[in-house]
Length: 247
Image (cartoon, rainbow, N blue to C red):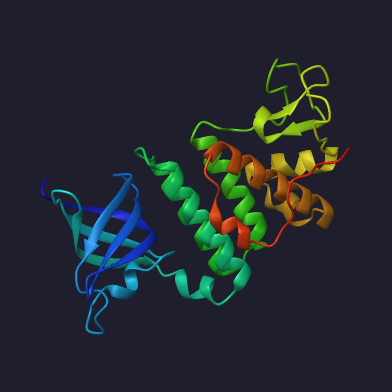
């Protein structure tokens, strides 16, 4: 059909001409969509504010030759204002939508859409620490995309764990026999926290020690950036450590 409707998260926008924008969206049923929103930069636009990053909208689009055309947009989740007023929320949300954009060059799944919507909603409400919401999102969306880190058995030989060596390039934790010389180690408490971030055990995450939260954040960021090949630029602005592990 030339015209279709879908639910979508706005990932990013570019200016086009004097009054239009190109809007990149992650939709529930149609994967990533790039569409032109005509006239949205005019003050008289009826739906310009609904097509800003971090917003969730019910959109009606017309299929074009190269880019689709946004015909209507109704707000489903107005998360942008609450996120934009807080630096940690804003930088975490920016890293999340950039990751979603990078991962979904191919067709996305509805689970990826729902995971992003849930993360942005949680950020806007301040339900948990912004960095923890980002870390949990990164681990879970990587898993949905086929890159789940090994956090129990050895990523190389499958030997039962838990294991204490962790490397982004190794696929997660590895046993002593498979670990390269000088590879970083991870504490048992940080490894437990990584599992909680993967499963969404927020009671455990919120009660974790600051040191474990910092170590887990560094490991998650390094793992995501390694497997995405191109760095997530927004992560440079997220407060947190670089992954070094322990020796």
